[in-house]
Image (cartoon, rainbow, N blue to C red):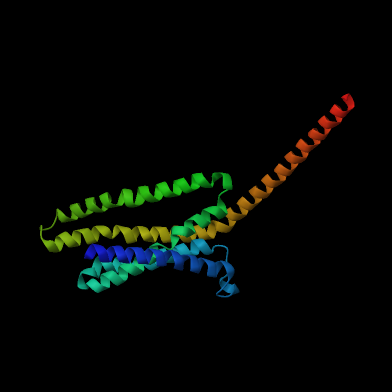
Length: 213
């Protein structure tokens, strides 16, 4: 029954999180909350807000979650919702700062790194920390729970790092986006020049052919 409830909470919170994350980003991007809050940094800020929301929820779950099962489900739902803010926002940020011909590579790096340092290595690392804590305490249900809960505190600690990095990305976003805009404009101008040169030589070739005929 616990697995079913957790699956439902994760699924619903994930869908809601993606929707709310996009809604916040659009509100900041188009100034729905007023011109004061309108900014092109919206996607990075919204992702940072999601991480910031999740941090206290995860700390409370792992430290005080044993006091109430209902508390665990509510805080897990809030935390997962915040964690899912960035699912589509990461892609939007990449679209704004990475040139089209390099986006597929950027997406592959993003996907690989997120899985490598997340669901691929995370369970092993947390399990190893839990075993190390458990080895120093009696093998009883209380410490079986506490060792795993304390090891899982690594997750909200890393969320603090991600929050800082998202807000740093927001600070640097305009510089990187403007750099890409200049690169694309320069590439467009170069393409026009190349097209004009190619057209000129085509005309020259046609003139020479007409003269020979």
